[in-house]
Image (cartoon, rainbow, N blue to C red; front, side, top):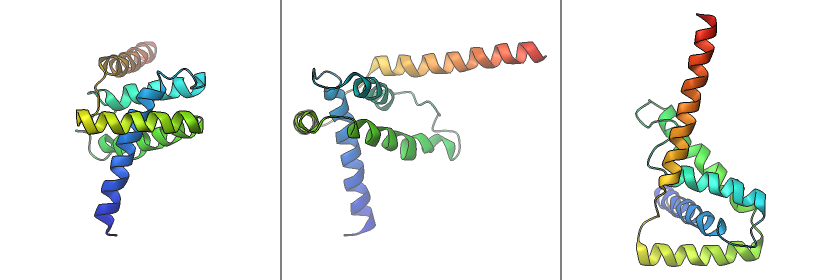
Length: 130
């Protein structure tokens, strides 16, 4: 198997597991800590706004290439096996019928809130020292 095929398969699994977490967040048997991390990861993954904007050289893609897959992997590992199987089946069906991942306005709002909080913290810090 070539490297490009392996990377495409890996990217498809990451995308599917992101949608899996979306379904797991609604599943009643998902533990609260897995729901909390899963909801955060899904909100971030489905948000049209990145925490680190892509136009920033190198750092802009670090979240897409390293941070997001690592968080998805961790959140999926927290799910009970039966919930994981059920939610993966739902995710596969969703991706087969819808052809795209869902989007999240709440995710965009979450990322915007993080940026506003960071900006306010920086402003208060600079105000104190200047």
